[in-house]
Image (cartoon, rainbow, N blue to C red; front, side, top):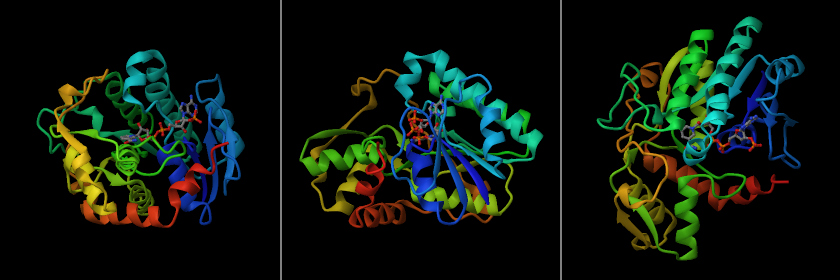
Length: 303
Ligand SMILES: NC(=O)c1ccc[n+]([C@@H]2O[C@H](COP(=O)([O-])OP(=O)(O)OC[C@H]3O[C@@H](n4cnc5c(N)ncnc54)[C@H](OP(=O)(O)O)[C@@H]3O)[C@@H](O)[C@H]2O)c1
């Protein structure tokens, strides 16, 4: 399959490209961070530049577009809402329109942060109510995609893994500090359902293979607090979990307001036949990749 992945220097996009490079004819779009010696074709381009999206699709002529590029740092969005709006809301809608016209299958990546987290256990039918610029712009993005291209697949995700910088994901934050023997904080009152990114990649391809269209929650069926997630990582890696201090998110000194309970229900995706691993399985996969030197391999593509 000829495939275009945007955000190929990002946590999800890079893992996706590395996992599927041998199996698909793959082009990854990067923006400010170029990759060196990547085992797939890379293109450099800013999706905010005039005409960039159409030019990219003309150049690659993909059968499938997996759109992972975004301003995904919650506090950066708060600082620069205009850019967040452009890249998280306008670009996806524009890409969706272009894909509809060219008969390109589009997968758009959205987020659990579209909900306010007051209740948790959200289904795809529940009314979103984002608290942050990030959540608001991502919600506009998913709505824009489905309005322009109802056959697109929109996945609301949450994931962790090994990144180009070695410090993009929450799991890397826990792991880096625990390995260094540094005390750190874990929120006991923020709940989420993260997938290991390699498992999310499998979920994306399984969803594509099943021909799914529309909105789906693609997170782990097993949810936990961020503190408990840190403790599970410590246990899995044989590190000292007592270094993690249990605290409230209100003690975190964060710029953007965080939704406390971002647990999502995944019955719709499971009923469609897509397997979603629990935390033990995901952490086992995460740990196996660590033992095999995967974090160093991922970082080695930084130019
Ligand atoms: N990480 C999470 O836990 C999480 C949770 C829920 C949802 N998501 C969603 O999952 C997706 C992937 O997130 P991630 O964590 O992998 O993101 P990330 O690591 O922050 O990477 C963002 C990617 O977007 C690219 N990008 C940003 N602005 C661009 C522009 N103007 N033109 C072209 N490319 C641009 C970046 O390119 P350069 O770095 O080369 O500039 C980078 O490759 C996003 O849609 C995000 O909202 C993430």
